[in-house]
Image (cartoon, rainbow, N blue to C red; front, side, top):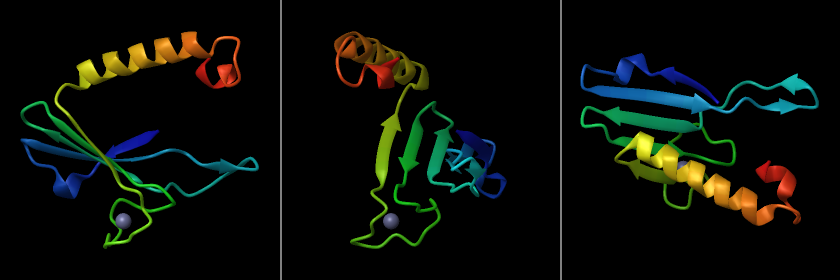
Length: 105
Ligand SMILES: [Zn+2]
C-alpha cells in the first residue's frame, strides 16, 4: 500500500490521505489507482473509504455506481489494529491444516 498526503485538502486539524495498492500484472507494474481515501481528524478518529472495480476515490459517485464503496469509522487506530491482529491470529489457527491455510500464513 502506497499512501500520500492530499496537501490541498489538509489543514492543521484535518489530515487527508489517499492510498493505492501497487498493481503488478505479468511482472509489469501498472499505474496506481488511488482507490482509498482516509481522513485523520483532530480528535483521533479516522474515516476510511475504499473503492473497488478500478474506481479512483475522486470519481463522480452516483446511485447505482459499481465502485462498491466500503466505509469504516475508526475511533482508535491502535485499537483497530489490535482487533485485526486478533482476527488474523484466530483465522490462522482456524485454517491450519485446511484449505486456505496458505492465505493466512
Ligand atoms: Zn461510486
